[in-house]
Image 1 (tube, rainbow, N blue to C red):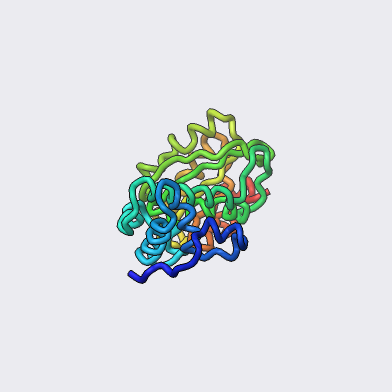
Image 2: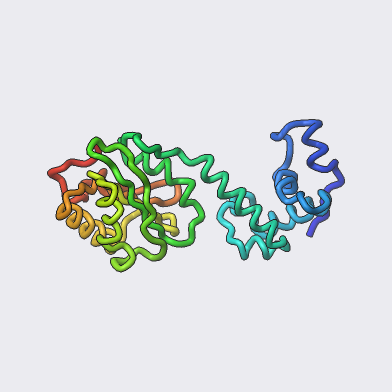
Amino acid sequence: MTSVPPYHLPSQRLFEVDWAALSEIELLALLLGPGSQESRALCDAQRLLETVGCLQRLKEASYSEICSGGLSKKKALAVLAAIQLWRRATAIPLVSGQSFRSSLDIFRHFQTMVEGLKKECFWNILLDGKNRMLRVVRISEGSLTSSLVHPREVYRPAIREAAAGVVFVHNHPSGDPNPSREDVEITERLVKSGQLVGIRALDHVIMGTDQYFSFADQGLLLNRSHGGHS
């Protein structure tokens, strides 16, 4: 491991310059610093970046990967907590009462939330009769199968909230948003189930890396009589 350059400690430099002037290692050292000497935090920060490869890769690192860089449990959790706070802060919010306009709205909201997820997660966005947001419900976590994404579990919160419409969202950890055959089959099953209970399925958006796939945009929803996005 290369030695830490002999410059001032990050907290001292911050008052001499500004945030933009601090290096990635110095910024990480400020995060890791509480509870230890800053010089030690600089070493921890440099070792962490060397372990994961780069700051971009750190966003996707797991707890075990971060700990493998020699960090304590508390410091590893601090890094993961900071990443989660960043994701939430940069996500485009879906506010209750906000009108659902397009699949792009969904992509912008979920983009930072799904970045780095190792498992597939499935969400249901509940809408009222005017396609306004009621709430977002996380349905399942794991490989997308008919047993994990059962119509009963998907529509139960929609019925409880008296939702008039729903939008399904799930991520592909591979980064490729193109739907698998099982994605198509599950979507068809959920759309048909929604028709039986009188709840419109407006879209199924699959999240990839910097791109997405919309069943409605591609004309692949079965309830065409209800139209796509409003």
